[in-house]
Image (cartoon, rainbow, N blue to C red; front, side, top):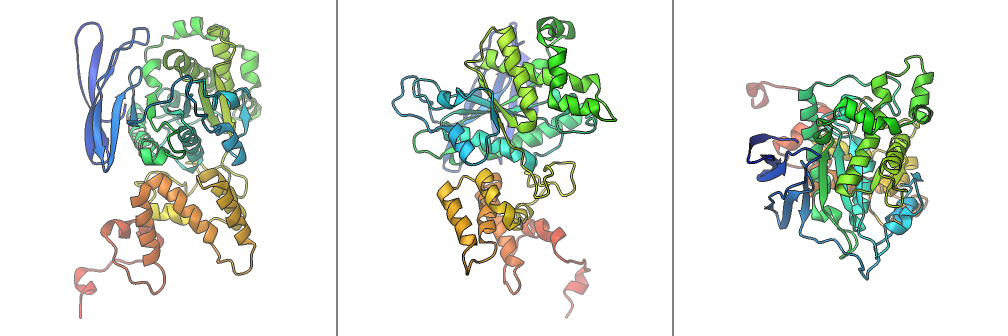
Length: 453
């Protein structure tokens, strides 16, 4: 996992490794098992980090991974308070595309059932996630806010193959060092956004703000090809795999599809099987282009574990599209990165401040946690005489920037925005100046030129 420094050592059959993972400007120790997926898990140590006024707990979650959590316990079976129905919330906000079973609606709010464990995958194909990935993080956050456990799966193994979904060409191969660096960056972004109690809280007393981060390379590195073909491959039907939309489009294209890409859906399907069997994770979410990969997992669970799907579910949300109908992505010019190191909070804020009136209401619904009534009021105000242009955009920019970059990032963006207002008088630190330098006219002067009388 990202990080970091590792000191390996162990006793007996199971070896362990001590990790030091950088969280903001603090360091904390973490110990996890490096035992084979076939061996039983061992208890892992945990530690506390005091971050501002919040106490976060870091401890193991099964094997080879950790979770970040405030001291909030999950509700147990027989709880008297019914959790908010996250599926209904997502549907109202335009964040629901498909469900593998409508029974998920009952499972997510039934007080007699334990909270769900919900995961979304992120392949480390770049050093940062981008705006197209933000919906997955937001849907995970909604599950958190409604009392469920959020799990982010870093695709350290699947990124070596490349997901063909929505792609016309095969992804370029990434070397191991790049994958490690990308994993570090993405893990840091997800932890920063979802690993804080203040980000998760929504419904008083009815939420679980813990975040689990896993890397599927931790189990794939132990898998042998012949074992996989025997234990998993024989349950996969080639006709069904070829019928998936992502495969059909590529097979019909001039470039075609490699066997490596063709196996991707089976790898992702096995991830769901592994997580359900070993970690009790029972819901996978993803964009609408992930439907085939998600159902590949539910099918494997049904066939291999002889489970009828009562406890496993898939949920997809619509892709976030631009006004012209194209996807947000990292391969496009001007990608909207979620890392401040790749796109400053100021530039991030300005992007949302500049969206069109035709997109702003839709973005408010899917990218913010504002009450729907407040969004409806903003929409009504936009049609009234005397409406101040960009009022809704300003609200959108503030909410999304705060969610992604925190209060400090929003303050930095607002300070830079105010400083660039014509006639404004403001003092800027070097970090803010550096963040806006590429977006304003500038020139370089020698010291004696800059300070001559």
